[in-house]
Amino acid sequence: MAFTKKSHTCNICSLKEFCHDIELNSQELLQFEKITSRKIVVEKGGFLFEPGDSVAAIYVVQSGSVKLVNGKAKIIDFYFSGDFIGLDAFDSSLHKTNAIAIEQTIFCIYDYTAIMKLINKIPRFSQFFLKILSKQLAQHFSSFNRHMDATQRICSFFKNISDRN
Image (cartoon, rainbow, N blue to C red; front, side, top):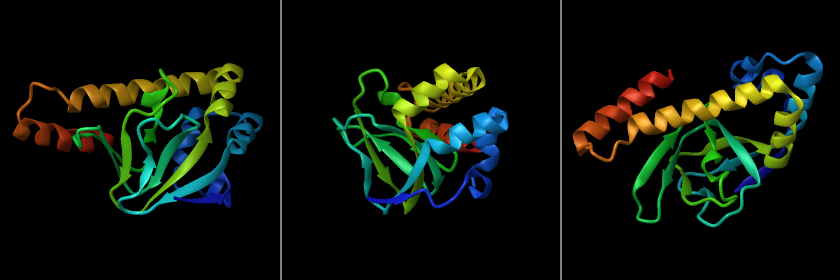
């Protein structure tokens, strides 16, 4: 894993439109930009986190793709540009899965504690964050029904990717 200091502002980030959907005023936007302190680059096959790692951040895929794999090497989910990753570990503060880069992947890192402070401080940010959680839950439930056979899962996977665009 390679960590880099923040070398950009949100104004030139490829996720600008996505993050600015929050509709924050200039003061609130500045607070949001401040918590994006760095990026991380994970090379193909590298791990973003592994089971047992503590939750220190929420990650947003800026470019590339990631697969979430359980302990039995079963793929649980895929994440692409604009997706938030690491939200599933909030309940225990520990990751339960492996997040593996499918290709070189760049993430924006949002400090977990700072995100929680913004949620409490800025109501619009709280609403936005709840929408993110809801969207990811809906995608997860629609794409991984345990009663589907392999062909149905593949079709559901492609539909899920199509729905994201």
